[in-house]
Length: 246
Image (cartoon, rainbow, N blue to C red):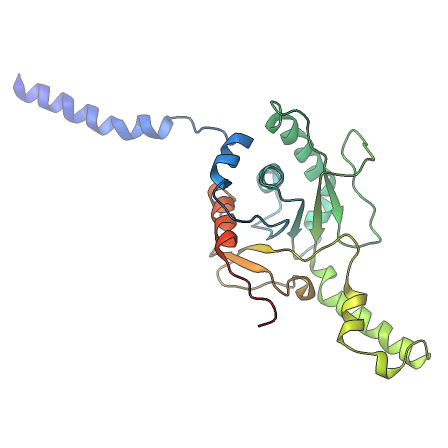
């Protein structure tokens, strides 16, 4: 009888992890984020991310969640880099997910922020949300690809050479400042923080002139973009000490 009782206790003990694993996770909300970040000294106004893995429904939904987390954290601009143009080609779908997640995420808030997807390329029009609201967005989401990096540098260099040949500018005016001015993109500030998913630190063609002083948070490998990664990245940025001009 005693052995039977001990065996029963042992079986119940083995079942404990199953109940723990089945315990539903508490959904992330704005109050949760506020509590996690209230001790941080600073928050980046512009966050950049190198896209993590294949472009599929799961990743696009993770990106939509990231947009909501970012806005709640005080981030006003989010740039997502994908080497190919796959992400840009799915921009309308991403915008749809953002609109859907926003309605649920901010359901208890006073208003639902306008989070709008756009392209880094100045020639590309904004991709409006489904309600076609043309007012200024509360947060801008830039989609960047390899074409916005090195190829753009080559094109700008060619244009500079042509301007010198045609006498539009002199060789004395051809300097780093002029090149930087031509490479700059309106409405696109330099990100203060870059989250990088890769086996080693490689920017994979991310426009280098936009990350002169950007803090990099490296995740070694293509993993899911969990909320914990987002918070760890912001905590690292809060602790970094950038010494300008030294």
